[in-house]
Length: 145
Image (cartoon, rainbow, N blue to C red):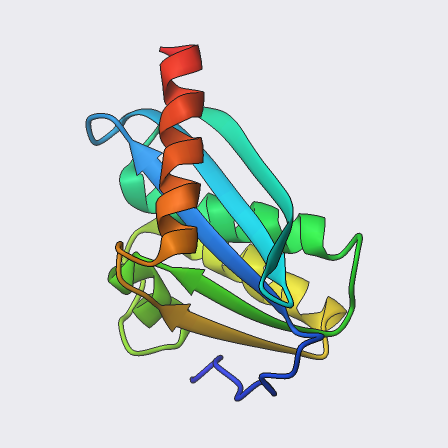
């Protein structure tokens, strides 16, 4: 099942850049996301998660971003992550074998109904917005560990 939908790349589309980080695996973890619209950051968020795996943190970053996005739009979203595994699981290229990750995936899919369209994209760690989300994660981890 392919959950990626081609979203119009108009200026009104909300671009969401997410990152999850875990020091050790599992270990102290954090999530972060950045909302970008018309090339400008309109919101950023980071949160300490306690002990999680890196993949759990990546999934939770996407889930929390969707929950927050519901407050500001019901339109088109493009979600970007540097986690190739998570994105490929979300678009159905990889199976989700871990029960906890499967629960997060189900919750993410449940949130899709609140938006016109959602596209999931893998991007390199060098992407400037992903780098910013990574810094937010690391700052949060530094505050809480």
